Picture 1 (tube, helix red, strand yellow):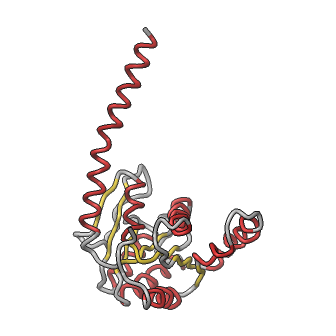
Picture 2: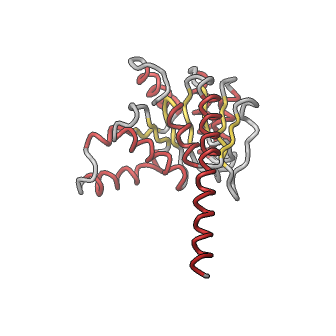
Picture 3: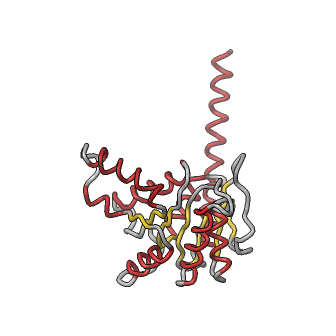
Length: 228
């Protein structure tokens, strides 16, 4: 009897998994349709916990504002902290301000600086991550936590393995990022787990001008288009 009950529960799980595919497909379709109409954008990542007045919050506002003034839209994860700062900078510049929100039990809520018609909601992290990578012309990565590192290394991995074309990945805040880069060089590289050329995939800067210069320089000889 216990075996029968166990198998019944397992079959119910498998059935629910199959039906979940339709919800996943719906998130992809909705995301593709809305994002494809927005135009060239740059994603800004960073901690949801960074408060207004913090130097990195204010720097993220300035960076996003400068990027928007250069003609790119801004995509963020749609929540508070650095995400809010990114959308705020785009809003101040009168630029496109996109928020890709994720349903979380804490931390996440829409920020008020997202364009009304450019706020998308996701239940699945992996669908949301596809939208970031597919429709971003560059990643600007401010100090953050595990989620920020997840997005960063996802992009690096996809470029390293030639799954997507190279685009600028810019880490803002040398005091925060230099330690990570040193570890990559001193440990990963020395052990032969990455190639020296892989280090060329990321750049560390401290000012909004450096960010815009890198993006503009990259796209002087490259076409602006979705990444796959």
